[in-house]
Image (cartoon, rainbow, N blue to C red; front, side, top):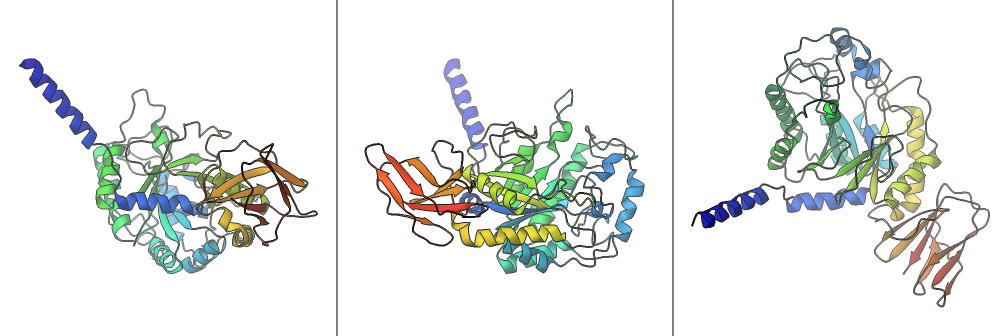
Amino acid sequence: MKRVFLSFFVCLAALVSVSAQYIPSEDNLAARRAFEGFRFGIFIHWGIYSEFAQGEWYLNSGLTHEEYSKAASCFYPIRFDASEWVKAIKGSGARYITFTSRHHDGFSMFRTRTGTYNIFDGTPFHRDVIKELSEACEKEGIRLHLYYSILDWMRPDYPVGRTGQKTGRTLRPNYDTYFEFMKTQVTELLTDYGDIGGLWFDGYWDHDSDSIPFDWRMPEFYRYIHQLKPSCLIGNNHHITPIEGEDFQMFERDLPGENTAGLSGQEISHLPLEMCQTMNGMWGYKVADQNYKSTRELIQLIVRAAAKGSNLLLNIGPQPNGELPATALDRLKGIGRWMEANGESIYGTQAVQLPAVEWGVMTQKDNRLFLHVFDNGVQRLTLPWTAKPKAVRALASGERLTFTFNKKTATLTVQLPANRAADDFVVEIQR
């Protein structure tokens, strides 16, 4: 009898454990599918740190929080125009924006009831930029996601990790009060700013070297968010295997499966994927950083990400006056021209299970295979193939291309136009 009761309780415990696991809602699953189809988004790192023009980590350089926070009293980005931002981003072919609602310096870029250290109450600008961005995005049909830092270099109740140790604050670590503060702010973001599509968390790695593992209570935080808004997609830039409750997996500065920057060694999950990369060198505005990637490099990065089954979140650091840098605008226009002609080979596509090729990469959608040819010196392409295709054409122009299907060798050879000069020449094969 005791053994029977014990078995009953073991089974009951197992059922409780299973029921506690995160099961995404139908709305969430639909949001995931839409997110996967976007393939290209723009990241915006903007805050009072832009005034110093030294990047978004400037407070961590030894400056005290009292001196740093004085920047808020003179933050007046007179040329900020949410509509112009969103139109320029939409023109690039990007389908969503991820904006920094609060970075590690603790300054909120929205009106919050948690204190006056925010753009509305703490600056002469006295405008809620996220409210304006949300309205502009809704008008233009662009999805808005929000970045949110879970570490803080200002608040005394934040349990200090390996960064922000020299800001001069009086430490009174209390994760309970800090956790409630974050819940309050996230509630504001998800209820006061229209249809926010996702939350992009950062800072988990601040406690990655603790002798005793720090409990961020992320599953609890995620449950709270999904109860508040089930469709909201959650991702976390923690550089580890996804945590229970996350809806997409991100990779910092590297394509999934690559780890050249040393931040993306985690295994690839079954979740939707996103890689983030900077347009130049920094995330936040740095006046000396003019090392912008070329339009060709950025287009090929979008394509390489799509070929891995991943979105690309491409970062821009706006200037302190509220303008997007001229070089960034130029790159957006160049990408937009290419996407207008070739976006069909990016949006809604999936990775291709074929051997890697030297001339470029491949994407696919339904019965269409897209060959992205980066090497303008290649004159013909040969692929393993099992049946004669219905059509082979240049995607941008619609020009029919000469091809040969060899049934005996099960190969397809496509002749490419001579003297082409393209950042990525796309061939569409209709199966």
